[in-house]
Length: 270
Image 1 (cartoon, rainbow, N blue to C red):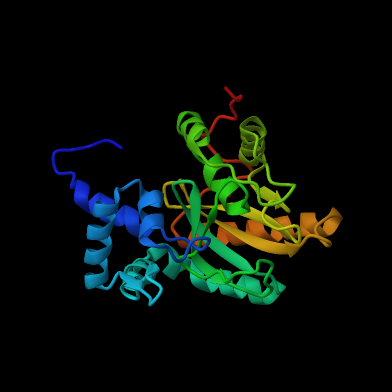
Image 2 (image 1 turned 60 degrees about the horizontal axis):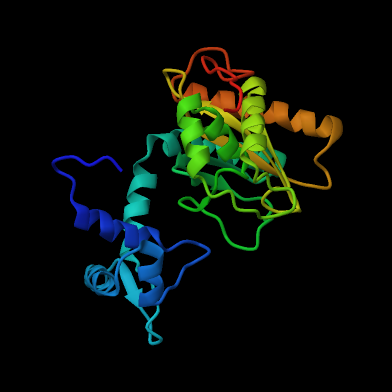
């Protein structure tokens, strides 16, 4: 992390404690908090005590910590104030209802995607997803689009540090194979996550561009794996491209909607 004159290390550590709580790890003991954050026990105790007093953490009778309700105010403030969500929500909902398919829009945060809009028609995962939920970028259709939009130098750096966790036998965890997959996404302008997150799920993703033609988000639709093949799959890709073009236009983009990502080279793995 690059430091500056005004960098407040204690604030960064406190935020690191909050970020340690995830969908896979919603509750932790003090020891687990210390292990997850790299803090010693005394520091972990100070930060958890402070965050509890502020309402950002809660501790149950078994002395296990979980996120407190005040954390929600931060997420809701971002989501409700996001121009991206305000502009896209109606298109996401209308598309989902029209085609009876779960449809989402997400942005990239590190090596995860964060949902900013979601309309669920069918559930493929055992846990609930909603605006603010996170999933790994490397095995999701939206994540592949957003990673492919990075330039070669940044993408190389990200892949080197990324934890390529395997979720199914189809998950791409080899960095060379993932690079090739992302170069293919650049060329064709859409992504397919084929049973990489769940063996029941195939997900398609396309970019959302802003007024300057920059990829700022990705939208996707979820399909039952047993149906996602042949002409019907190609038809759904075309329909999703139409949604991506609509949302991009709502954000002020007026150029041709890309069959590939404009201005980005399709480099070779280094």
